[in-house]
Length: 131
Image 1 (tube, one colour):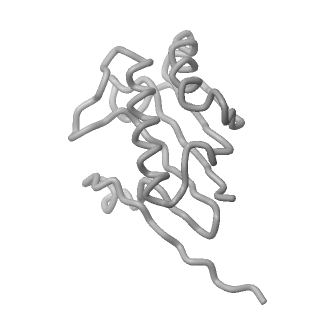
Image 2 (tube, rainbow, N blue to C red):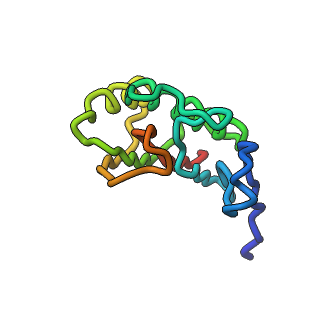
């Protein structure tokens, strides 16, 4: 028999969530999806001009969302990184490696024309499977 799995939504408290219609993370069963996350705090960009600092901030926000959903960074199986300047890949990759050196999820990094704020250099999505 196929039971309906509970959907748990994790909010970041952003005023944009109800307007745009999204939440920071959603857990259904043992899968957690974390929305595209940028280096914003209280409406301001964290680490303006510094892709490493932005990436670290983003991954800490993702880590917090995963914990709220009952998951951990060790259970992340995929990340997607959207960057505005691919030439900065080493700084972004270094920060990513600090969080995932032992877990090593599959990952994608692509250059995009722009993010929602011109000072944002990186946006990251993550997927975790709780075992």
